[in-house]
Structure formats: C-alpha cells, structure tokens
Length: 246
Image (tube, rainbow, N blue to C red):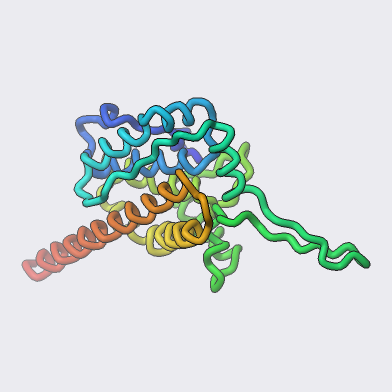
C-alpha cells in the first residue's frame, strides 16, 4: 500500500526514528501497527533473524513504553528454525484443504486455510463486495492505494494494519482529527477482524509464534479502541462546551 506521494507503509519504524515534532504516543502506535503488518507474513531471512535473536520482542516492548496504553508486551522470540516457522505459517494461513466428494462428476470440496487473513471471512452477515468496497473508499479518501504488484484484496489483514499505521502517523504529525476516523475504522473493520483472527487461532493446535502474535493483536487493538473512544468523547465534550459558551 502507498500514499499519493508514494510514501510506502510497509517499513518498521525503530523507536529512535520517531521525530521529535510528532505525537510520540500515536507515532509509536503507528510503528507497532506497521510491525504487526510485517509479522503477519511468511518470515524471510531478515525477519527471521530479528525474531530469533529477540530484536522484535525488544522493539515491541520499547514502542509500547512510548504509548499511554496498558498492554503487556508479547514474547515474539522464536526458537524453531526458519523452515519450521515457515511451515507453521503456511499450515495456518496459506494451505487449504481439497477433497473429491463425487467421483462420478469430479465434484471437489475446497476449504480455505484454517486461519483466514481476509476480513470478509469473519463477516458472515456482510457480503465480500460490501466489505471490500467500504475499504476501498476508506483507502482512497485518505490518499492510499493498494500496490497492484501484489495480488491482495482490500480486506487482507496486512493492508488493514498498514492503513491503520498510516492513519496513526498522519494523526501524530499533522491531522489530529484523524482520531475519530481511526475509531470508525476499528469499529467497521480492524477490531472485528482481530477478534475473528484470535478466536480462530485459539481453536488451532500448535500455533506457536502466531498464537502469541494473534493474542497481542487482539489486546493491542482493544486497548487502542478504548483509548480512542475516550479521546473522541473528550473532543465531543469540548465542542459542546464551546457551543454553550457562544
């Protein structure tokens, strides 16, 4: 995903890279969302090294310390080798199941992977089209676009996490009114998505890193929502006081 000025949203901001003129709390939350987006991918050599030597665990803890959220840091350090970690990722998020149910006509039953990384799979009462159209409008409104070189629907978890990270960066730097937009995006998409992912991961055996990652995603987004709701209420109260004073 990229913004109109081609500011790509996939990188991980180190704690020392948060500019002095930013709202440090919101900027750190944005960095966590960007890191979560990276972690919900199959680990390449660079990511695996950061997971296995404890760098990721330390980085998340340091970023959380710069927020006002009361969230216990996760242990995201891995001991298994990269091949085993990749196999675990694919077993959970990539590999589906197929079975021939009628040999006479070749009818095949197909089922997706145990844990879907697409929001629409957790929204049985909302159509795929409605979910993705709503997301496309949100991305476009804030000047973001999906990278056409990577074939993902708008409701892929990585895209939603990258978008929330961008909203945090925008709020921290130039646009405090994004607070209400972030809360709405949680309510309409990301928070519902996180609850579905962690619930599904909880029903799978041997999730390892990804079970801990899902648990942190759930706890972090829940705390962010609670804090955002309080901020929005405070803003509404301030507006009401000013209107009464006029």
